[in-house]
Amino acid sequence: MPQALRRTFSHTGQICISVNRIFVQEEIAQEFTERFTQAAAELRVANGMLVPDADMGPMINEAGLQTVREHLADAVDKGAQILTGGAAPQGAGYESGLFFLPTVLSGVNREMKVMREETFGPLAPIATFKTVDEAISMANDTPYGLAAYVYTNDLNVAMVTAERIDAGGIGINVNDITDMRGPFGGRKQSGMGRELGEPGLDSYLEWKHVRVLRQKPG
Image (cartoon, rainbow, N blue to C red; front, side):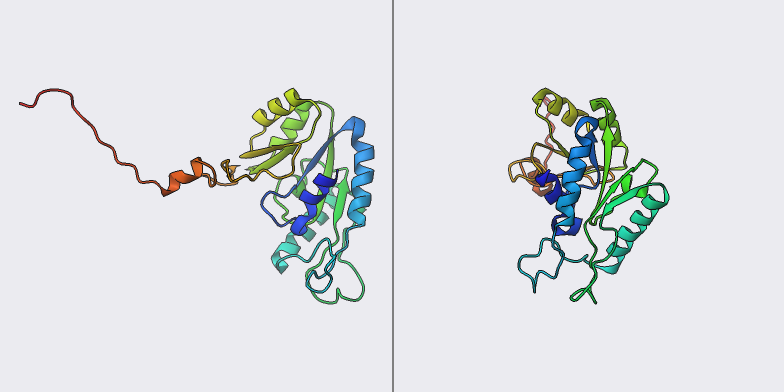
């Protein structure tokens, strides 16, 4: 749970490999959701330049904040429940700035923008699944595919899931897919090409093709 929390709200959810959707197996969904929601509610939102122990700062611009509000309103209109957050923080220090509280949603479905588009902000929709096949189908139900994370005690399940999820990088029991030794890049509308690792060198190479006809001239 702590790793999911960090990858969801780190940098206010404004990094390319942030968690946009969380899928939890039904048997543990209630406990996970309660713990995740409590931890999110305890995160300190503040200006990190003035408050060194702030956990989360503001959005980078007004357009990003508007996307968060739009996705939240769309989800609520379609039946989602706000478990914590859902608004800008109130009080001294928040009179200006693009702050928004860490927000956790339940009762989400595939018709909601928050489940199909990249929010790029502090929204955490939690959906449940029964089977691994269902979880994989839900994970792939988006036009994007940069990063995904799989947490399980069964390595066989983890590897099969990682193979079938259509994303450029998969973290198994780790919340960061980046490694200088491995290629980094997305699938579908999350981009083309790779950087880092041996494949990342390809864009710096110039190939020369030499064709030889193996016969005597004449």
